[in-house]
Length: 159
Ligand SMILES: C[S@@+](CC[C@H](N)C(=O)[O-])C[C@H]1O[C@@H](n2cnc3c(N)ncnc32)[C@H](O)[C@@H]1O
Image: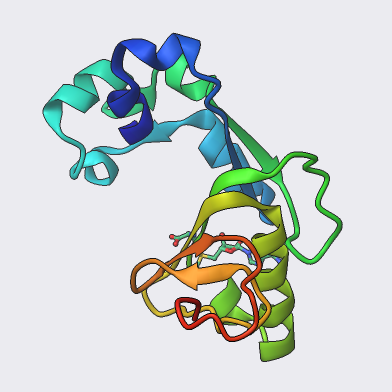
């Protein structure tokens, strides 16, 4: 909704796609259904509700143009990733924290590789990505990271 709102009149001409994944098929089915109860949409401003949601039997369903931007798929993060392109933004919040340290390290590196140069990674409030000396991620906020080019040795502007 935020992206569609910011895009305004340009929405139709922009190639905006969101891939939403989870290992749990039930979560994927819920996302696909795009039906939210009143409590879930409390934080959404009125103007956005009217533009993007349709009331339906006491709940709210996301309107088709917005639903068309998002694909929901089952994915185990530890398996092979079938996605071919890179992402401008990745949100992975409150998932990696449940895995052991070596697994976390592998996943952060996979996210880094899956980002376009200049792409953003957002993690949960209790999560931190340990930045590798030769890695391309750098901090861009407390729980925000950004992919740059691989740093030159000793470049002090890289963390
Ligand atoms: C604590 S929830 C976080 C959900 C959401 N990101 C949030 O911040 O509210 C963790 C989610 O990770 C999913 N998950 C657990 N292991 C996973 C895996 N190996 N691959 C993909 N998703 C996984 C769970 O099914 C669950 O939906």
